[in-house]
Amino acid sequence: TYIATKGRKRNTVVDTLGLVMCVKVTAANVPEREAGKQVNGRKQHLGEQVRRLYLVVVSGGYSGEPFLR
Image 1 (cartoon, rainbow, N blue to C red):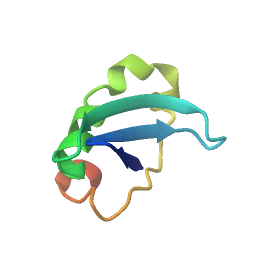
Image 2: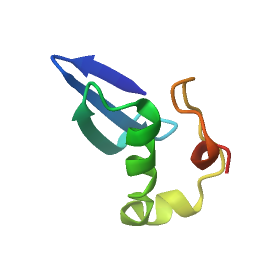
Image 3: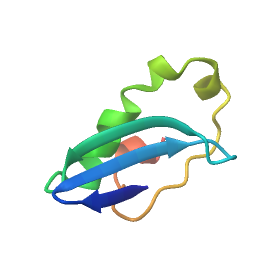
């Protein structure tokens, strides 16, 4: 999900309990797809939690090949 605030977007990854696993702050003019690619690229830093990941739910702005895999 993302929250736009004063020219910035916070793209967050949370677990099923809503605990924050990763946050990427971008300029508001950066498309969700691009920010999502950047967050997706940081998976290796999340360790064991990501190895068990089997479902990702995203909004319509996060479309494209990286989110279909």
